[in-house]
Length: 93
Length: 244
View (cartoon, rainbow over the protein chains, first blue to last red):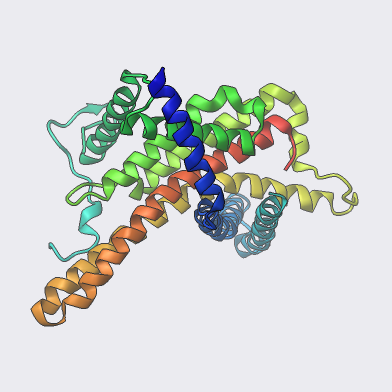
């Protein structure tokens, strides 16, 4: 058990050293890069899904250019909503 | 052919051709590398948990670190109610991470650079989360599509937009991983091709770029696995706690 005690005192000393050093949140850098990658695709994906739904409905009802245009804009709105929500979630943290 | 940057993404058959009706189930290089990463995860976790000493060895530290990393991610984003789903998210994270990392080795194949692989993973998450939501809340889960305080005139429009936003989840999840991996590997190959075609005189600049890009790609490989797992947690949070 002597070995164990020695390690716990060493850990305490090491922890104190970490507390003093100014380098603290290195992990948050990677997390924000992850957020940037996340948001960029969210906008595009909703536009793709909206346009696809419009295209399929157009084929189904035979109203060729009308629904794809409407659903393109709906998809864009959904994308902006997605981005807005992610940004809000990031802000809350 | 060696200079073609898209050549690395080719899927080819290894061994005999296996057909079940119209479905081709042959063993390909893609399946080989999926199997390899699964085996690598099992070996890694087995070695890390074999000798559970109080003073951990290096591999035990990494294993415990990956466990606590995922556990903290789940409790931070989805709360304590999501604890039962830890095994699934841990498996997902480790699989994507190992596939990405094994893809960084020279002469290997990156499984996650094919949209069909990432789409299947994302659709499994999407369907699973939807089932969990309906199982927990029943028909009330549909309230997710009806935000509070919207005028009745705008409601049909908002509901359609919300449904598109919900359906875009698997697409954004899969396209993100696939596009990042494919673009990165193509770029590495293009710069590698420049080194050869520019020769001994001008090849040093692209060589430096490729070294830097390799470092960046390793970062991206980790980050994409992290983003995939954390978004699964966020969707799980929506399903369990029923709010955005």
